[in-house]
Every structure is written in structure tokens, then in C-alpha cells.
Length: 453
Ligand code: TRP
Image (tube, rainbow, N blue to C red; front, side, top):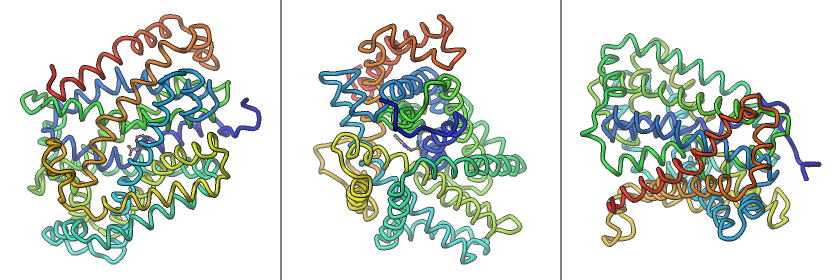
């Protein structure tokens, strides 16, 4: 089965490509702003717990299931889950389409900011003007739509040409560059007077601010940021060879992703506090705070360009993995050619994203869906996909791996190429997490969020 199927050049290449999928707008744009709107500390702690106790076991399950099945989520769920489980694969593909539709709108904002930076817009040091740029952007449907279309076109072009060597090669230098730039920014942020307050905000445990919805959001975000719950990691894992160590790769991806998310907070919040801005500013946080900081530095245009280009690349490597899941479905399951599959998926997603680009505060669906009231398309799509569909998909993966795959096959697959995977204690801990803790956590958090418990 694995004959003829493309594989990564090396395990390191896989780690970088998978980290490229994981590290994206979720880390640099969304995590700081949801941390801000959820009041900081306690939210971060719950998020870290979700990563370690739920995210990592599922990451290992997804990558392992992908390598075992050597195919995308629909085929993998059909073969190893069977019955109703196949539906989870379909839900994953749908989820990829929904997420990419609004992801591309935000990614488009990064393109707009590259364009603004290139014109020297952020060299003036005028804070009010920088704040106004973001307001102008999101209330201008034409500009948002334009950059969304451009971003989708770039993503389509890459996936159209066959993505693996491109992604793997690009990730090899993009990821390290992003990491180094973030480190430099963190060092700069430590010199700001707001750094102490920021540390306190991000790491102090203030339970009073945490709501049941916040806990659901922390869980949902841990899936979103690790690209879990819809088969992206499963698909990437399906390109791994049997000699590769899935355990250390999964841990490396999780650690890299978490480091970048925490670094993003340690850059954004010091700036936010130093300049008297609100941590709960919402989706505009990164697009306002960063340019304000750059405008205070020597060479503002250089820094702004560098940052927004990297934000764009981080978003692109994630978007590629989303489009790849939808495209691979049409290729693997429907027998389409790659060019046609890419175009049909890509263009549909482009259309589906337009309401997200237009929406600025237009409430959706009317008053009967209480939780969605006041959310625009972008927020509503994000809410449904990340907070509900991804954890549900993750539940499906955990159940299939823990209850449907045979013990012998599972143990052997995990152990292939991995020293830690061969340890009985490690295997059993992982299995118990997938069997009991992961499903119970996901179900409890969901019931809690809807107010049942
Ligand atoms: N993880 C990416 C981010 O943090 C987004 C992403 C890429 C994603 N592929 C995914 C999210 C698959 C969920 C599922 O920006």
C-alpha cells in the first residue's frame, strides 16, 4: 500500500512541515487575543493542561493512525474505525473547508499589512493612525476580500503543483527564521516597562476570570493550534515511513508550537501594556500592537516588513495543510486528478470565505441561536469549527485508536522506529489517556460549556 506513495525526505523534514502546519495564525494572532479576552493566567494554565493531557496523546494517535493507514482521514477512519466512525473523516474534510475559508481572510490581513509596511506607513510613530488602519481594514469589505482572494490564489498555486517538496523545503528555513525573529522580539520586549505586568497577566492564576466557555475555548484552541481533530496531522503522518520515530516527532511538534505561542504572548502583552492598550482588544491585537512597537524602533519599516512577511509565511504553511486535506479527499476517495481537485476545493473555499471578509459585526442566524448572536461570520465559523468540531473529531480519533485498532497492531505501529514507543509503560500510559482521560475531558468540557454540568 505504501509503495508509490510519496514520503518525506527525512523525519526532520516531517517535523518542520508538521510544525509549519501547527505554527500559524493560531499562535501569533489567535492565542494572544483569546488569552487577552479570557483574562490571562488561568486560561493559559488550562490551555497548557489541554496541550499535555489531551493534545499530545491525540497528536500521537493521529500521526500513528496516518502512518498505519497510509491514507487521508476518510480512508483511515473507514479502514480502522468502520461503522459510524467514517463520518468523523467526512467531518474533518468539512472542517478543513470551513477553517480555511476564514483563516484565509485573516491571512489576507497580513498581506495588507505587508503592503502598508512597504509604503512606510508605520514609520510615522503615530499610534492613533496605526489603530485606525486596522479599523479601516475590517470595515472595508473590498480590501479584505481582495487580499483574501490573493492569499487563496497563492495557497492554491502551491497545492496545485504538488506540495510536499515545496512545503518541506520552505519549512526548513521559514520555521527557524520565525523562531529567531520571535526570540529577538522577546528580548526586546523584556526591556519594556510593561514586561512585568505582562508576565503577571500571562502566568498569574486568576480563576475568577475563567468561565465554562473559556475552558471550552482553551480546549478548542489546543486542537486548533496543534492542527488536530480533522486529519491534517493524520494526512502528514501518512507520508511518514515506517522507520520514523512518531513519538519524538509528536513531542517536538507540540513543544515547538507551544513555545511560539508563549513567545507571542511575551512579545504582544509587554507592548500592549507599555503603550496603554487593552489586552482584551480582540482580533486586532497583533495588527495593532506590533506596528505600534515597530514604530518606536529604529528601522520601523524593516521590522514591520519582516514580521508581517513571517506572519504571512506562517499562515501559508498552515493554509497549505488545510487545503491539502480537502484536495487529498477528492484525489484519494473520488479518484480526481490533483489539478482539478485543487481548483474545485480552492475556489469553493475562496467563495465561502467572502462572507467572513465582508462581515464586520453583522449578526448571524438571528436571536434563537443565543451563543452566536453578535458574532460575525468569521467569529461564528471559528467558534463552531474550533470549539466544537475539532474536539469532536479528536474524540473520534482517540476512540478509534483506543478501542477499534487491535492491541497488537497498535503496539507494533507505535514501536516502529521509536525507542520510547517500545517501552511498555509509555505505551500503557498513552493508551489509558486515550481510553479514559481524553474522552472524559472532551465530553465534560462540552457539557460544562452548554451548562449541563
Ligand atoms: N494550526 C494552525 C494554526 O495554529 C491552523 C491549522 C492548520 C489548523 N491546519 C489545521 C487548525 C488543521 C485545525 C486543523 O494557525
